[in-house]
Image (cartoon, rainbow, N blue to C red):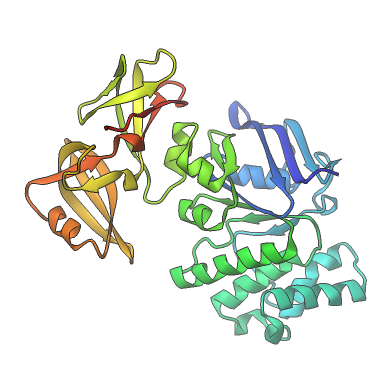
Length: 363
């Protein structure tokens, strides 16, 4: 049997004349934490419902461990599910909440006891088993909800943005819990989110969902460093990448903001330059492209600041370390200059949004 735990092939789904999923394909492997990241309105909720068997598809296949389950009912797909909200049954104890998915498949008393022991140890909730949901904190409720989703022993689990709405500290703790849980179970986790920061924190493999399709799949560092399309660049990353429309003339990219020598394939003329925040430096630096800017907002992110800049009417974002005292002082100056690293520029065709080239480093 292959290493594939969940495979989706050519999935399409429409509502009337509105196409939501368009020939969507991806693979989630065993012993991998895969994250599908897409901006709101790109089909994430519909994708989850079709995978879980809550909605029929128009075409395509859903395959779990080599078995086609496209037309199987939800309960027989052998997929664990962790929902977006904890939604515990208030009249059940923690133990009964965890056992409930196993009751639906008529699991034996022994199997339920083993499952409760297994997941309560994983998520450190053994002391909560006889409590009622009303007695739990928000973090405890979410741990119980995760435990309930994991109670069904299988090779693949779908996590539908389970950390949405939680405060920062609680979310950080649960992110670590999820990573450790996946590593211990050595199963496939498929996490669906619109939060790029969660994708960066959790993913071993990341898939970019845009316009109802998976437009790129690969190791997190590869997709981040080498986006194959503009949606890949703007969806993955925090703060979001900067984009500048312009034209390619020969080996030059020109825009109202800057010009750069580029290495491009094909004959595209209208293009979009994408630059991640870390590709923009404060002040003048050798080998870079300098432009004038003004600071509009300095956002405190803890160990660093996100600097929102106005450059000829276009918003740019860069990041500045809290320890970069000189850089912070420069941000507040009236004659602010920022420097763009040419090698940090990725070029995309304006029509297809596909990558066509990169900036060339200055020697």
